[in-house]
Amino acid sequence: MRRLTALSLLLVVPVAMAAGYVPDKYAATAYKKAQTAGADVVKNPKEGDAAAITAGQAIFVAKCVTCHGTGGKGDGPAAVALDPHPADFTDGGRWAASSQGTKQWVVLNGVQGTGMVPPGLSPDDAWAVLAYIHKTFEPNVP
Image 1: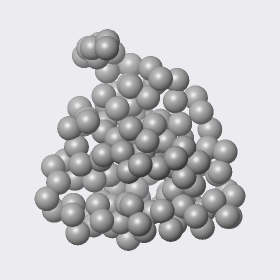
Image 2: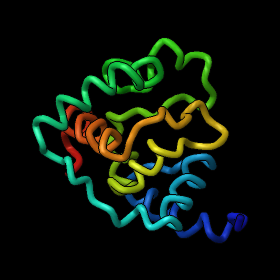
Image 3: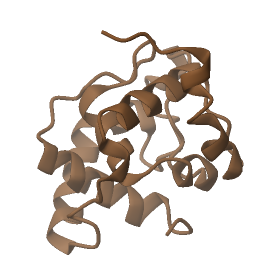
């Protein structure tokens, strides 16, 4: 396994900073891993699909609310025990800083060193939950 260096992380951080969000070391490493896997160029095939958004909502309630909260702010009941805290899906800068494919990679693989563990979703289910998150919590993010 190739080790990520500070230099390789510098390739990811400037893009995120341009959106007003500076990723912590865990997010920066996850974004770089997603980029290395080629996930950063993949688009969500479920985006805007009403049936997928409905399915994504059910998945979000079952798998994500405990940490991310019903409003997507990273304030679910388990969040108080997590360091770093779960992602706030309403932070437009954070979500503009990563591609749809990167987000799917994070959902499928988790973020090492955080409470974001892989929830055991299929790739299609991950796309559905991301379509729901985008529609519901990211209204100002294209």
